Image (cartoon, rainbow, N blue to C red; front, side, top):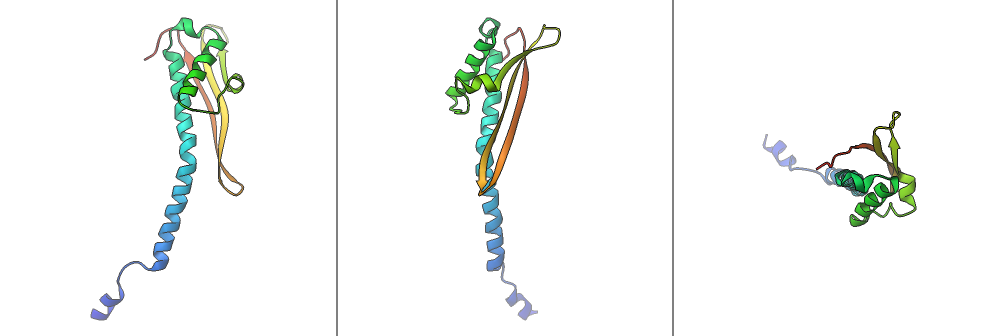
Length: 134
């Protein structure tokens, strides 16, 4: 019994390397995914900021895009500028024309390594009501 206890002393070097490799993979994925997720949360915040403006400040598509773009500039999201905001941000009307919706649609990707990428596809829509949302 004493001989068995002397042989069992903890993790081997191979076990430590395996754990370090797994930790490295999780770290690589996390550091690559976090900027994409942060941008997604910022876009949602920008959409809510448009909704929180008074209705007279968001009557036209141009006004909505301007408010959204200001919020993106304040949060340092470089994907949106005067040119790309026209491509990514749209205001759509319902079939009966009574409701308006703000739609933001784009794709973002970060390189994991070599030729492997992590891609995020954003297609968010909120209703632009006549009331100011909080």
